[in-house]
Length: 286
Image 1 (cartoon, rainbow, N blue to C red):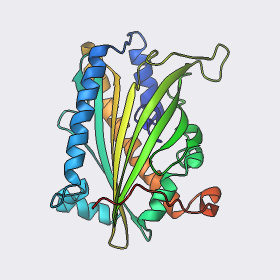
Image 2: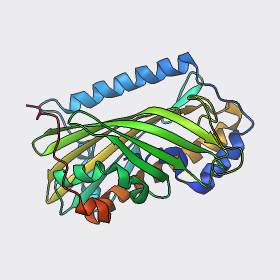
Image 3: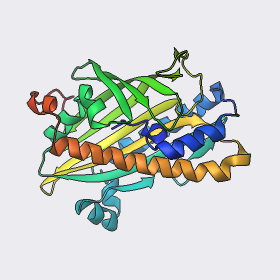
């Protein structure tokens, strides 16, 4: 899943250039930026709820026969989730991407159990995730922490806490996850390392939200994940250089994330393979 802020922390070379390019420009998270983010997420949640209604298409994958065929044969299909990605807002940018994959010879319970092995994220999603830990687990919400770093973004890391909730209905399930706290670590692993206050720092990722949908059929499980992130704005003078790079990093990161997830389900880490399957879900939706 987010393994995740891979949108900013997965592609080393591009991230290094992005870091260097933006180094001279300040970043500030303003109330207007947060307002735009909240409005965008509210609209995304409304759109996602429509997919759950009877008679509507549940999976984005199934909206295109060509897309569905590619996914079924093993491709991971990645696309911007909106016509304007990244989308400029007041002093910020919203990145919205979606990807779909098929995991053969498995069931939805096995996929969900793998997604809930938070202690193994540092192994599953290495090298983007350096440390991971489950903080709490219940039938309503899981909480976990991640430390993300990239050799490409100089000496900066991000320490984050996340919440995740699952809902199951028959052969379908969906997961909503969001960052509840993100803090940059300046000079990570070096002398002078320090944890910055929330919403201060370079502004590569200020907010994060994702929704995943799963459906068991055709001898496996279809998985699609939409990732939405808020970052600092790009100065207009360098947008021509940076915007294509951001899109490339996001596309590659999301594709790699789903590939890592599929590999973890089919070849689970030893600890995950030995663990009892998770069985706590919200009540089925009728």
